[in-house]
Amino acid sequence: MKIKLQLFALLSVAATLSLSAQTNNVANPTTNLTTANASTGKNNTAVGTSAGKTITEGKSNVMLGSFAGGDAKDKDNNVIIGDSAGYKNNANQSIIIGSKAGMNRNEGKENIMIGFEAGFDNDKGERNIYIGNGAGRDTNDGSENIFIGDESGKNNQKGDNNIFIGREAGKKFLGENETTKQEFGNNVFIGKSAGEELENGDNNTYLGYRSGVGSIDASKNVAIGDSAGASFAGINSVAIGSLAGVTSISASNNVFIGANARAVGASASTLSNVAAIGDNAMVAVTNAIVLGDTTNPNIKIGIGTASPRHRLDVKGVINMRVAYNSPGLNVNDNEFIGIDHSGRVILANFRMKFKSKNEWADYVFAKNYQLMPIRDLEKFIAINKHLPNIPSAEEVVREGINMNEITAKLLEKVEEQTLYIINLQKQIDELRKLVIQE
Image (cartoon, rainbow, N blue to C red; front, side):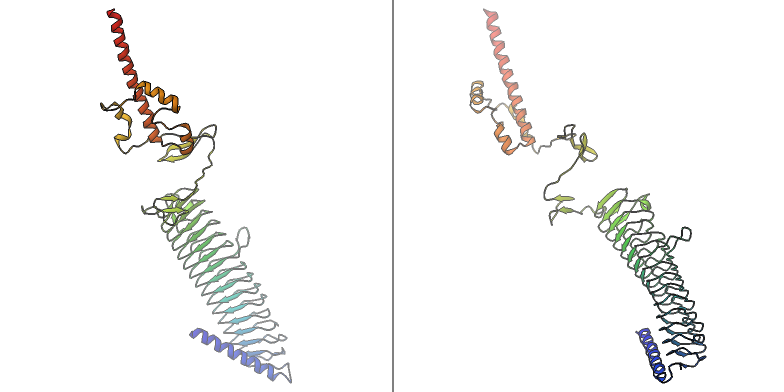
């Protein structure tokens, strides 16, 4: 608040002096209100030792402070306040406030520079806004930037269309590769030290304290949250959440969403094409998507349901498109469901589990089991066209079958057949005895 009041007071003094100068020049418009060397420009206000001393034809300028606009050229409509502020000004329609603010500024026009050494070396950059001590200090040709905060965008050389808000936000951004001369811009960094180390890159968005702080050469990344994407040095990655993506460095095309969602393992810094979603979600291999905290056994994922009860709970149809002669579903790395060469679903490497021994068909061999007489079996088959206790074809088509039940029932028929065969063998043996006796 104190700084705002001081700034408002300075602007009020400048406006009052400018109005007084213009009023005093109504009769003689070539006369300037000045305590420095007189000039022949129109409607100028210069107050301070050597303030605006070199202006001869410029008009409607306000220069307040020792050497303010001291070596400025004949330009118009500038407000320059502060010791040596805008000292070499050679452009129109700018506001320069602060000791040595825009001191070496040359041709760039329509800039706003407020703060000690704000825009100090600005040369041809135009339509920039620098607010804060050292904000945009080294900018040369960069234009249409907004740097707010002490030393925000301090090292920018030629970068255009950047927004850095926060102390040291984008501090080391150069905007030009010194070797290839490729220029970069269109970055948005908001938060103390956001994107502080980034030297070259474009179309990055970093929002939060130290978000993207350690990025050096990165482009097209989004980092939101405290230290999110702190070391990004690749392209096309997203990190949202405190410390999200903090381990990812020379990697691209990644998504980290959730506090501390990150890549892990020996290759964590270089993993690409991965996604870790959820607080503390971790991914350790490339080309992978991980949902939820891998250390929390209670994490459940629901699709189509708001109350999942299992690790993966799906309401609806799951459709898998699998190539012929390929596994479709593995359990503990063992193939469970696959597709054969004709595109038919096959089951492999599985075992059926029964809850009770009574579900199995060994009861057929119990002494009290009533085996249907063979003549009754013949009649049943003639009438029903299927075995007893076995569903008909119509039932199977209509209701399907339970694999455990049908397996046990088929075994029941095998065991009954075994008993029939045993009984038949006994009858044969009896007949053989009778034949031998005769």
